[in-house]
Image 1 (cartoon, helix red, strand yellow):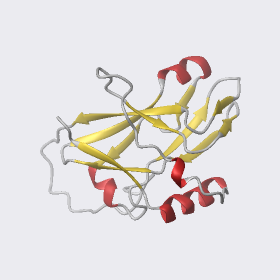
Image 2 (cartoon, one colour):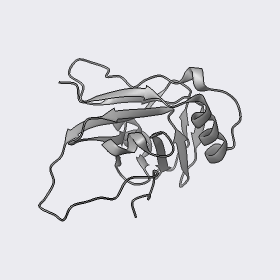
Image 3 (cartoon, rainbow, N blue to C red):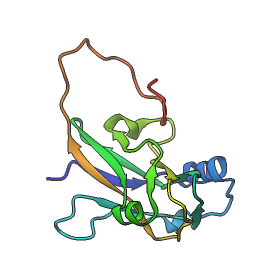
Length: 161
């Protein structure tokens, strides 16, 4: 059962985020690949890096994926490091698990999925353009009895306070 659809963000948004986050002005837009599963039994959709980067021990980096995701209400996309990078290099997400809510699709940054990585190991992590580096898994979620929520999302990291 399909509950989501991956898309590229606009060339303008991707270029802006590359410049703002990594001070890169080259155009890697055509190198963005939509996430896909490696096998029919895979739960995770592999995200590939649109750029080369090196993550040194104890460093953090924010990688613009170039991807946004339309998600049906009642589902969430969780982002995790690929297990091989966690095992071999102790790479993790800076926020431990990336949570991509359905309403992020309409955020001011076009719902651009930006992955904050940290190297908790003692070796450089070298990621080449096209390498699979994180994976996303769609999950159904439930809500508790609560007061009506009326706030609308504006941005990404920390935008909902």
